[in-house]
Image (cartoon, rainbow, N blue to C red; front, side, top):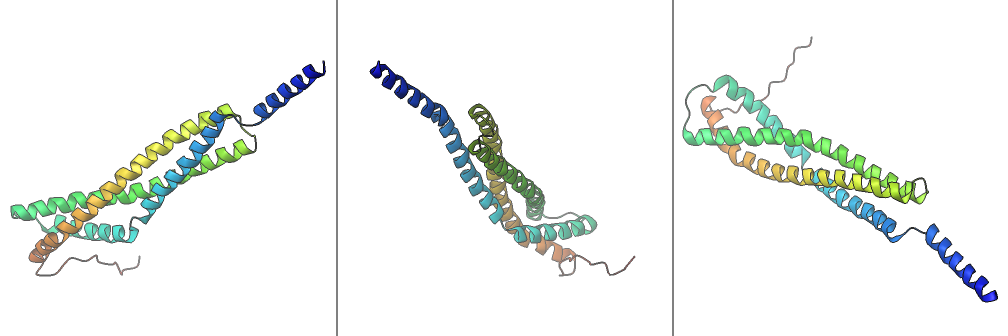
Length: 194
């Protein structure tokens, strides 16, 4: 009888320990959430390191030159000038798109990071069950993978576009000088108050 009580106590103790502690699948979900947070933080840091002042200067120059080109360039130009002009337009428009997308991706990545952090805290505080944790981590993993892929694509587009813009800039500036008596167009600041 004493042996049965010891055996029953031991089985009950093991059952209580295993039911109170998270199972291997739940631990794997928590680790997945943590590693996902690390990867997303890394990609977010890369995106934030893209030189926003360089983008701003390039976009400002692109906008200024575009206004001048649309207003003053209406005669035939050489094929090489046209190719550089086309490269200038394409890369400038891509930089504008990157500038807009960059801010959106930063906000989206921060939101996902907050969600993952909240999931971890909720699970630690036993506010959600292991099943809910697994479901929500899967959803956040899909969202994070999508954002990571978009960040990588945007960074590749940025690097290509900034290089193309730099390559086209000098020939386009030479074309503009040729059409504007040797002077580059500059943005005119409005001094008239309304």
